[in-house]
Length: 302
Image (cartoon, rainbow, N blue to C red):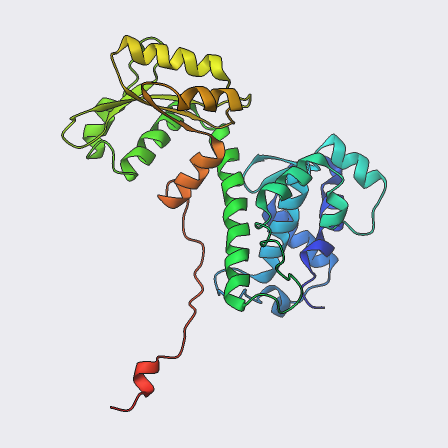
């Protein structure tokens, strides 16, 4: 049979995890291939990019959706285990689990809200043929990028604190701060003074320095934390600071930062992920589609 759609894979995939054991994706690939009676030819079918099998890609996405809905947990990338919520769903033995089914779970609904493409301007038609192929590709690329951002922050939140400090340092260097890595590493060491995590040269010559506060938090960062950071800056007679968190800032915290005499930049988890993607920190190119057009110059008569 042809490779099933990834929505058709979710129910059997969740049932596979009903034993309560942790399983690698490679086990899921093999077991469900047998379940769907896929042939070697089916399994060897590649995506248009030619970099991954269609079967592996769809199983990956099926398990990822179940994870985002809270039906599976992921101790580490490529390893899944069923949750109590997942057990309750398997007990009902749903015949099909698609994204509409998963929208009943708040975690998945929130994930889809973050990853869905922007709505078109008011009055714009969204029916079939309403957008060009280039627009469709751009919209899909946006969805993939937003999914990647969510995935990145999940990874960052589980990082060792020292590795997180290195991540922040790598990002700032990639953005042009600190000069070389050796120079930036010296400046990037924790200052352990009044709540400041570190500092980095604003430029290679060290004409000015920027103090850093980096927090791997789940809770929202409020105004008191920013006030404490600003107090620490004042203790260093510093005028510039960056406060980075893996969570979010309250409206009060953002409003307070806007009206300070010092220049304080707030980077939340969403913005951190965007910057990591933009500057290739913690990400790697998966595949590339090359789109060509007719070279009009070639066909013009001289």
